[in-house]
Length: 228
View (cartoon, rainbow, N blue to C red):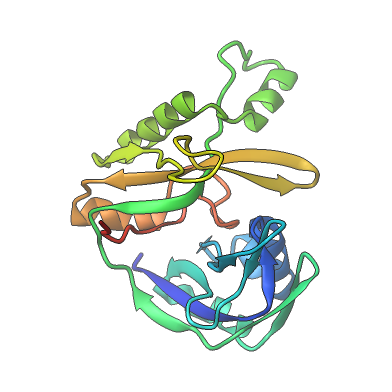
């Protein structure tokens, strides 16, 4: 399947920085195909300018809802254009989308990746163990990075994965840790940078991502701009 990206302008004042689940829920309510499997989609986080108290200020110039899906499924998402959504108590409206091809880049970055972990002591015949292995996730940077590299290897991607560090502030020198809250549960993830990709690997990573919650803004890789 040929994957493309739709970019809907996001019009509104602000969104919570942790908006992945609330945005997905709002989109799914308006267009059930986003949830019931009719559409094979990956949804990216909406960019904005960080403000106080965990909020993003939306900017007309670059705040976009980015949805990746097979080209033949575009009609399933077009009804979202022009609609107003309530996302965690904040009203946004989506404009008419641009349709773009995925472009390979040697270095890709995802704001938040989450990786499930299986319990090494789980018993396949024990329901409690199976439930535990489904919900446990890597939360420590070293174990998490190892799991990301294993996933890339399984996908046949030879790029080098690392966890970018905070450069300033109270967490300077630490990996960029993020949390997502779903039904009262807190899920931990990290920003991931993958470098040295071939064109084929870059497109595969943009299409498939890494880890879970791909409809909630996780594992959504974009080009890392070269900066000094």
